[in-house]
Image (cartoon, rainbow, N blue to C red; front, side):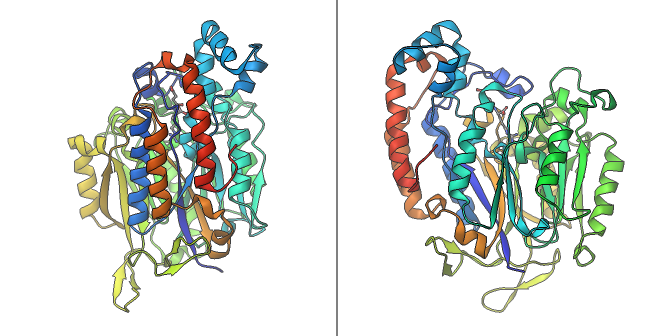
Length: 480
Ligand code: SUG
C-alpha cells in the first residue's frame, strides 16, 4: 500500500460573490438576502485560510471558480439578443434568474462531489461523483462545469469520474459524506447521510418546514458506483428537527477525521442507535483493533442546535497535523510533499530527527466560535481532554458565513497516495508563488462591494470575463 495523506482543495471565491437569498432552508442565506457583499474581501479571506493550512504543513490545493454568468441558461429560458441585452432583459423580467446565472456558489466545494479514496474501493481506484445539486436552481448550474474541471485536474487512470446521480435524486456531495479510518491511508468506513427518500417517501420521517436536500437513492447509488468494499459504508438519516432548525447539510452538525467523529447530539434519527452502528462497523475495519475510535458527542444542553448553526462549530475543519514541519522533498508539481504517518491515536511517531512526536489534530474554526462563550468553552474542554484534538485556529470567513458556508464548506477533502498525487494537475497546488499571483489577481479584478442591482451592470460582465481569462494562466489550464 502506498502512503496516503489528505489534501484539502479549497474553492476560490469567484468575483460575483453576492447575497441573493437563493437557498431556502439555509437560514443565513435567507437572513442576508440582498445584503451588500464584498467579493474581494471574500476571496482574500478564503485564500488566507487555505494558506494557513498549507503553512501548518497540510497539502493544500485550490479549485477554480466557475465561469459566470451562465448566459446559455438565460438564453434557454428565452432571453435573446446580445450578451449584455440578455442580462438586461432577464433582470427586468426575473432578477433572481440573473442572480442564479451569476452565482458564485461553486465556492462551497464541499458540495462539488463525493470522493472515495482508492484504498476504500474494490478496484483500488479513487472515485469521484460530481454532485447534481438538484435541490437549488442556482446550484444545479454547477455540475457540468465542475465535472469538466475535475476531469482536467484529477486526470490519469487512477481516477474514476462518475456522472452525477440522476437529478430526481438530490445529491449535495461531500457535505453529507464523512469518512472514519485508522489513518488516511487505511481502509475506511464511509458514512453517507441522507434526509429523505424520493421513491419511498412515506417510510421516513420528514422535516415539516424546510426541504431535505439529500436523498437515500443518491447515497445508495454513489456507494454502489464507487464499489466500496463490503461493510465499508453506513447510511444515516438526518434528524428532521435539525433540518427544520436550519441544518441543511450534515456538515452543519458533524465532522470526522481519521479516528475522530465530532457530532452534535441531535444530528441523526435514533442518535444513540446510530452511533452504536458506527462503533460496531468501526470494529470490523481492518486495522481498527490498533486504533481507538473517539466519538465526541456534544449534547444539546451544551450547544443548542441554534448555537451550532449560528457559530458553525461543526462546520470547522478537523485536520491531522503533520508530525514534522513542511516537507523536505518536492513533488512533481514543485509543491512540497510531506510524509504523514499512520498511527494509533496518541501513539508516538518518529519525527525526521528520530525523536518521537505525537499524533495531533487541529480544529479550523470560524471566528464566530471564539465569539460564542459556550462554543469556546467546549473547544477549550476538547483541547484539554483525552482525545487527538490538540489545537484550534480561528478564521474570519464572514463573507462566506453570511451565505451559510463555513470553513468546511469551502473545502473538498481528497485523500491521495503519492502516485495519485503526482497525477493531479500541478497548476492547482497552492504554492507560495501561486498564492502571490492570486492575491494580485484578486486585488486587480474583484470589486470591493457588490449589491444585487449591480448584476445588471454590463461592466460587471466585461470585468468577470477578463478576470477568468487571466485566471487560466495562473491555474495553467482552460477553465469551464
Ligand atoms: O447551498 N449557500 C450555499 C451554502 C453551502 C454550504 N455548504 C455546506 N454546508 N457544505 C447553499 O445553501 C446561498 C446563495 C445565496 O443565497 O446567495 C448558497 O447557495
